[in-house]
Structure formats: C-alpha cells, structure tokens
Length: 142
Image 1 (cartoon, rainbow, N blue to C red):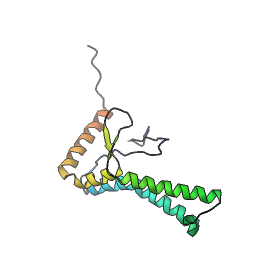
Image 2 (cartoon, rainbow, N blue to C red):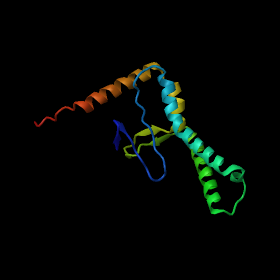
Image 3 (cartoon, rainbow, N blue to C red):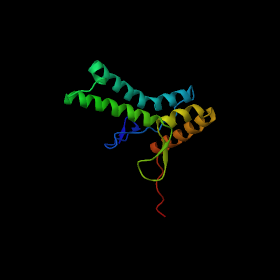
Image 4 (cartoon, rainbow, N blue to C red):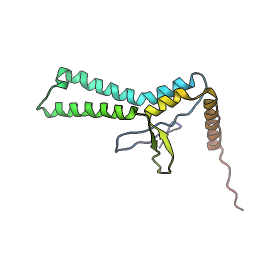
C-alpha cells in the first residue's frame, strides 16, 4: 500500500513490519537512519511502560483478574518482541524473492557503520528510482 508517497506494509501475523529507509539528504544521515530503526522498539518500550503505568505495582504480582492477566501478557509479549527485534539479524523480504532486509537491531548497527559515501550512493539510487516512477519509459512494441 502507498500512503503519502511512502510504501507501507501491514502484516497480521506476526504483528510486525519493516522499514526500507530512503536517504533524502546527507546531513547526519547515519544518525537519522539509526533513529528510524530505533523507533520501532522505542514505541514498543513506551507501550510496555504505559501498560505498567496503568497497572501500577500490581503489574508484577500474581493475579486472578482476567484484565490484569491480559495486561501482564501484553506487557511481557511486547518486551520479548523488543528483545528479539534488537538481536541483529537479516530477515527475508515479505515478497519471498530471496531478498533480505535488516531487522531493527542490525539496522541500527549498520546505519552507524555506513560511510557518507554509502549514503550518497543510496541517495543517488533513491533519486533515480523516484525519477523513474514519475516518468516511466514506454515499453517498446517491437
């Protein structure tokens, strides 16, 4: 799905997604890229903190309340997901084409390891793809 010029992919199971970043300018590109990858786990940590805030000290205590058990389960599931998401690894693209993308942990690390020249090449490729999308070549009918 495309939204405001950006490709978005939603999945129902496992509840996840991924980001293919696009370099728009080279000023602090590695930090911007790393923060984009860190946003996913960051939001999950905020969600777990919000659940903990709502439940108070009861969050860590055994409970017979169905609502509290559901909140505890959500909090634990989110924190486990954060931990697994931050383990650096590459993940097969949703298309099943054999292409791999970085998970958030590997994305953060590699964002900080890439050089300015790497980001300049990525920007050049993104600019070329954008220009190709705006004015696609007509197919030869020969």
